[in-house]
Image (cartoon, rainbow, N blue to C red; front, side, top):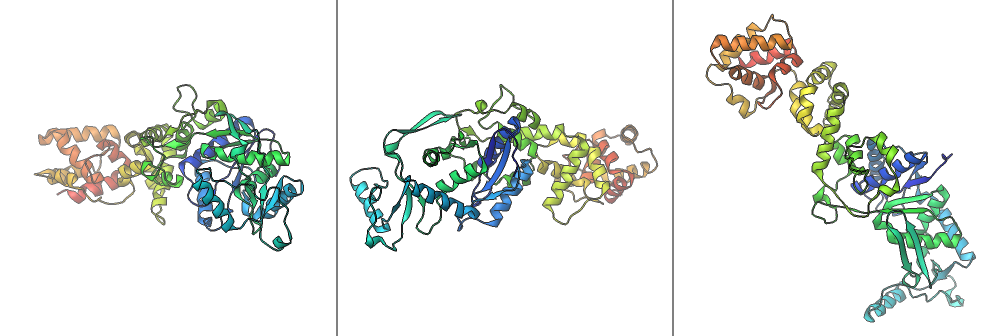
Length: 470
């Protein structure tokens, strides 16, 4: 592919499960930095674990990124398809003396580990084939290719988030690059793919920090340019423990299905370990303008669903009534496949949106509060709605319906006529307004009744009132 000028970043998930919150944040940070710098944002699917990688997980990654609005440049790269290239590099390292064949059997390695444990030593490969040449007895025997890692000095990265990070080389063993069946290990595949993709910046979670030492040794052995590393602290729950499902660590698509807007989700993920002064509400255009690596903090972020709710409520209020009506209808259709809504429903929803959107934090809540606008005919009444139809209320509703048959159908007229009716019957305004709200919506907790009447229109409103009146 033809890359833009500027940094090249990549998001490289493994398709062994859903796209979770931490992965989505990593993707967002990479995308934002690429946008901020005029660089390139690439997607790589690390599907070398054939037993656990599934097409469904790949689709979930694509769908999650698309819903978040994180479009990648070019075609996705699938790591498994590049096994021959990974093997080629391993053979190159072998030819240059930076790697060697190890013929140690699984039994020998298990005995080595057991002895190390018994002596209280760290368990790692002891280099038994590092300087040993195979003899005739190794002919045709299986072997792995190991990196000939430096044994003295340090491996150092200058991390843009964590600062200088050092590893003593005598604590890092000669890792396997190519397995005995010729398949590459994760460490080798990542380095080769990053180089071939032209990746200049590796921005990922801090759980990959130890991988950086291993990968950097391969990079240095090949004489390739070192990328800029930035390892972002992990996300914890409100209790400070590692984020899990009980904290809300769900698939990113689950948040879509719970009724969150992608704009709100981007804003929320951005604020997990990144800041710009005291700003909390950061629209995407501002996020692109402001995002830099210096804004990433070193402390773990805490996942707070209440903050996400608050942000989502803000973005819903900021949307135009027409656009939010579109969003709610699309949400309703996703929840009920095969269910379609006509322009009349959209018109009702748009008319009521100023009252509805201030009362909800998610599309789920908004749909629940507006369900009466999606149906035709009398709604089912909940217990509180039924309780309003006491005494002579049903008679009043029938009389009121007849009075409304020929009046102008606008907010001012409907309110005036309702007040006049209550006065004429010697009842309080609430004694007619509350039952009206109940029979129009099926519940008592609903927006102002006059707005409901206008939104439903004369025919639909009178149909609902008559159904409960006498």
